[in-house]
Image 1 (cartoon, helix red, strand yellow):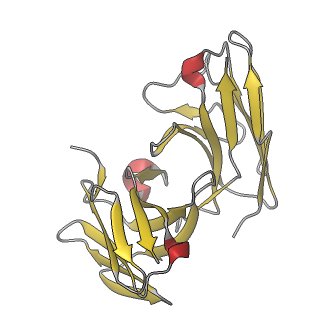
Image 2: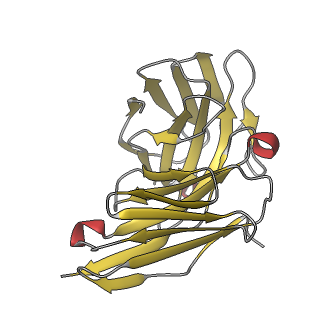
Length: 113
Length: 115
């Protein structure tokens, strides 16, 4: 079992729709959870971080964390073609990984005009 | 956020040679990491660059192949030694500000092609 698993892509949604990206992790000691966006040929950039159970909203983005289910998700509302990218879920555990990030394989999102 | 300058941005190298990649951060950071990202793949951690001591390597990566320096809290280098075509990849420097929140910031990446 991979330490961080993301729903297999690619994911295609029409412009204006909600894109839902999912991620599960295996280490129950994980404390920090991140979503990165990576455009083709570019390096990853942080778009959301979440540390406690529940929802965290930032503009069109909402991250959801459920530690009991070891599940974290990212919702993108009113999806735009500019949201087309690969989204990487990352998980950190200070106690077991000394702050290192473990990344999922990524989900490629295409938003069609 | 942190501003990270990584160079070179790309290079084409002959097999058997070595390439050193530099990573400069605009402020002191506790943790610096080196990742590899092969085409269409996610990020694989090579090692953690420790200031003042040897780097900590992940399984499958060894110091002889990927020597790392970290002379201070703002700078690190990764050398890819005795290169083969299998080393063709994107290499990324990443930093965390501190141990508390561990948000990662990335350099622009180095696209390496070995011929």
